[in-house]
Amino acid sequence: MKKVLLIIPAYNEEESIERTISSVRNFIKNNALSFHLDYLVVNDGSNDNTEKLVRNMGVDLINLRTNLGLTGGFMAGMKYAQRHSYDFAIQFDADGQHLPEYISIMVDASENGADVVVGSRFVEEKRPNSLRMAGNTLISTAIKVTTGQTINDPTSGMRLFSKKAIEYYVSGTNMTPEPETVSYFIKKGFSVKEVQVKMQDRLAGESYLNLRRSIQYMTRVAISILILQPFRK
Image 1: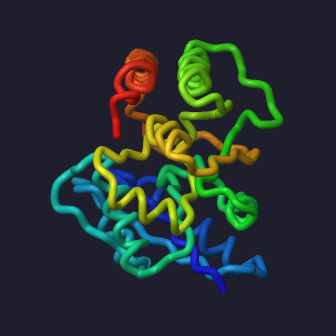
Image 2: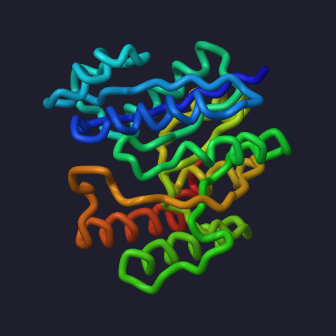
């Protein structure tokens, strides 16, 4: 039976982490899975009760003493996946936006040949018109121009990596859980596929990316893909 690791980076998620973990547990309990699913919380230097709540629930935990950001936190999870020989690793938000019911679909897509699977909101559904989605479209266009492949939801944070992709991610330099890495994997010959998922609003708290920061982020990512990535080995 293949082994899947759900990597849940968490920073100050005391209001939502218990419900997120419970949703994963209920998914495992209520479904006859064709794979073994483990879940790991990477507490990224939280200064609230995130660590305490996770420990009280008896969940596997990597506790980072300082805040490394999503890049450092996710890398810690990917190294754990490599060290423990997982067949697949899935990036999964702690804030409740990602739904466990789509894990099986993503695993199936990878077992059918995809090295990286993106949980996309816009495979079958149309991308809404908004400033935030305009940025998403900008990044999608940048990836299309530089790789020839269309990724409809490049900013989705729900991504699966195969064992091959895990090894490459951990051994690489400047790897981040960002759209640039999806583009980079395509350029390096990895098979990247999207599957349709639905996402829900955050269970609690506020996203770091308000409208202004979202626009700045989208612009930075597009510039990175179009201008900087061609020089990346």
